[in-house]
Image (cartoon, rainbow, N blue to C red; front, side, top):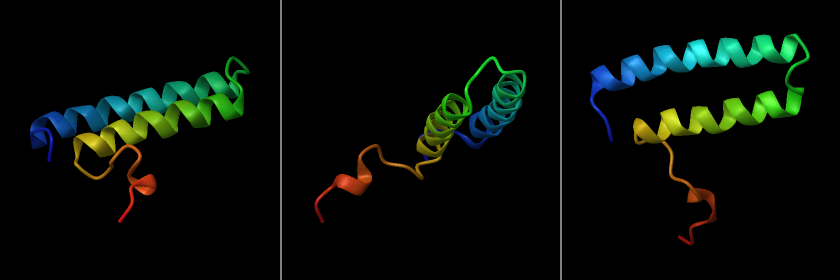
Length: 63
């Protein structure tokens, strides 16, 4: 884990608020659906990275 459990918990709470806001903006027509999905994908990947569950470019690494 790259961050403490306390930090991860707060980060997940904030990410949920962010996700709700992005979805609301998409619903209002202020963000295209593809744009909203991109915002959520990348922010979700950051949260996963903080939990040590994601490696940028990991799929492309030679094994």
